[in-house]
Amino acid sequence: MNPLIHLPSAANELACCTFMQQLLNDLFAGKLAPAKIFSADYQQHTDGNTLDYEGFIQHLNHVRAQVSRIAFRVEQACCTPHMLADRHCVTVTKTNGQTSDIEVYMFARLRDGKIWRIDEVTRVIKGDHADKSLASATT
Image (cartoon, rainbow, N blue to C red; front, top):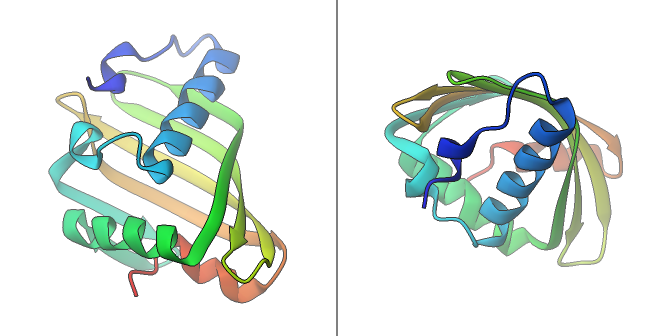
């Protein structure tokens, strides 16, 4: 089932934060199939790098291979029928044991109940600044 059909009210920021946090954690843990929430013509623009749907799938697989643990914590969020926006922190533990915290500002546009575009900027707030590349890396 597509969780995007049950968006919380924009007036309830806590519910939006909880919704987005669950969505991101499930997606990167492999509990949520990307095809359920992303359109076939999906585009992601992160820190000047662009990925299409297939590139995003490669990105998910790359991140999963590079990290032993990933956890999303959504600090602020807004949900509307046509856009999701949030500020979240990602804590990654790489397979070598190093950890980093990455802050992300994300704006996702929705069409026909799926995400068709994401624009985001990231910054490493703790850890190796080279880990910023995890935000859009595919290899």
